[in-house]
Image (tube, rainbow, N blue to C red):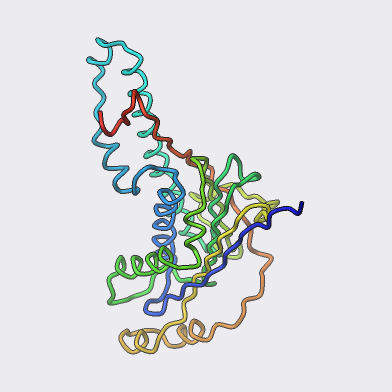
Amino acid sequence: MSAKKTKNVEVSVNVADEVLTLNRASAIFSSLVKILAVQRNQIPFSYQTFSLLVNRVRRDDEDASKEGSWKAFQVEKQRDLAKNTVQDYEKFLKMIQIGFENSVQEAVILFGATIFTPKEIWHVEFPKDMKTNFWSTRNSQQAVDQIVSAIGFHKQLWESFSRQLLPTNMYLMLKIDESKTISQGFLEMFTKNEDFTIPGRCPVSKITIQNNLSESAMGNRFLDLSFLGDVLHRSPEKKTENCQWYECDVSVKGFKDVLVKGKSIWNL
């Protein structure tokens, strides 16, 4: 019997109405991570809802010590796990922000026991030479939301979102252009991994972010047209030997909502 063929998907999403900066790319990728967290069954609710519910949980140590029951112990254990998961996601998102203070070329999210044995991979490729900041009259969050929606509702990604995946670990890899200045904060939180390559043994969903601006985007903003010329007519980029993969020192373990005597901690 022949081995089952790995299902890989590759899509492109164009940012036509806004110059894509590193700051916006960071916001887009962070939003994608929040979507993947719930879509890939790593948390039971949307990130915002999960975080809100966990922060509302109050430990009642006095009642727990009085009851001293197995149920009380299991409830507190689940609450602690939920709180730890939220804290880990907060650290993880902070690491993304730190990472995108540098010249990020590509970003990879791996789900699995280790980075060497992933169950599935989400690979995002960004435009080369993104600027740190760029003046715009448009609402930045609105622009980010539209791009993230385009990714979330992309038909070719439906199968990737619907594929079954149990709670597991989430890892982050960033490909950095080392010919540009790298912040000290980044080097303290990320470790260079010269041996990393994207494995071909598991499903890979690749999203290529393009930044081919429309004529209306040019007409509605006071932009540097010499810069826009490079963006609008981007020629195929040559691979540079200066780019290296870095592994984030922070990972996140998926939260499994375990029932305690038929109820979850959210119903107690």
